[in-house]
Image (tube, rainbow, N blue to C red; front, side):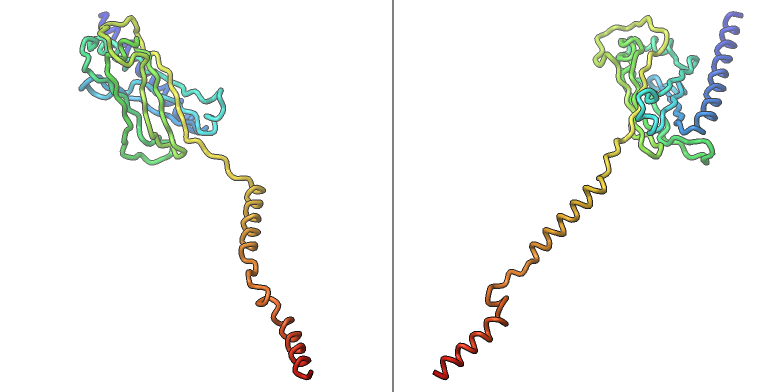
Length: 229
């Protein structure tokens, strides 16, 4: 009876989280936020959704108070017990993945491609399930990078943890947009270039080449005067 009760409790929790995630997806997508599902995989096991991330838009990310993604775990799918069972297997890998393209409401479904990352499971256990999840996005809603970091980078052999759930710090970053040149500065630069071109194109002919039309009549008159004498 207790196992059946526990099963119903887990099913109810999963259903509740799915409903909440669907409502958030419907409401928040109208305001421009990106909804990203996070899947995980232990060793050679199957992929399963672990959480949902609500990412701020590029405009919101410029505001410090709105730059933090919202991490919504699906507790029934975190597989904490299974992770602990692999604690003494240092070569077991832990993988995370997110969809490469964020599909917003109203877009036609596409073939799903993923961006993934991997760490050693022992590093996650020795960090007491604490890790930082970083996502890099471009301006068009594509995921360009996924990184997971743990406080412990090298396993030292600890095979147990008292943690009962993940502790996650989530981050998102967008490409930096450089400042556009000022109009006044651009006009000033063009004027300087035009002035430089004019100076380079100035007449470089000799004195005689420039004023021969004045010198020649004078020279002829002087020759005629000398001949008459």
